Length: 202
Image (cartoon, rainbow, N blue to C red; front, side, top):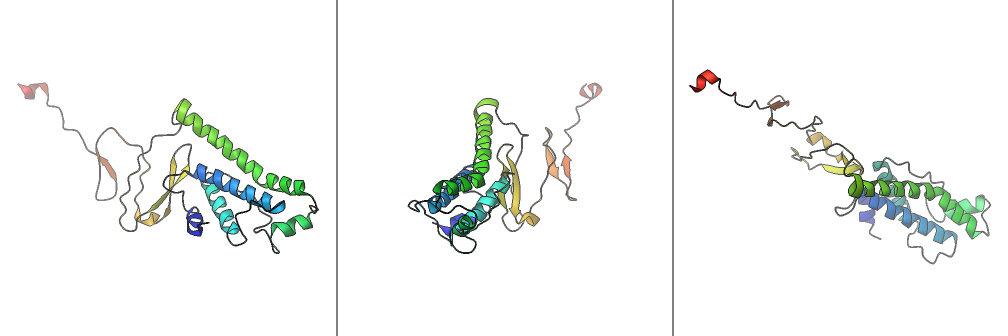
């Protein structure tokens, strides 16, 4: 597993993926690995070093989607804070099904919420068109390049998560008239040239 890629997901999705796609993939990854550890361990690909990183990335992506992350009672597979210790302390010895049910209770609501978002995204794209307000995004930072992430995949809301202090953000809607930035930082509409009066055209 590429640890740098996993850690980068805390700050935004890859260029060719959305937060929704990443959240679904991470949810499936965590579900499969914890179920595998609680049963036969044959399909487990994570270990005690990288599974906490996946959980952190999972939490960050869900929060960007405005979803509540799972409350994990364990953070690793083994050890004092591991899933193994948890199931032994909670009457799940000798029952693979009980451990499967435990992980389902942890991640099932998240999976269902993501599937609902996926359905909304499908309707937005193929049935009703965009449901949010039109937005223009113009990046011209005076300093470090900002890092911008998609906060809401339904309405295409963005958030500057790094170097926001170098950006000038305008939230007023675009106008039909031409607009320029005044020296005092205000957006000023250019006044169209006055049409000559009838008597001036003689």
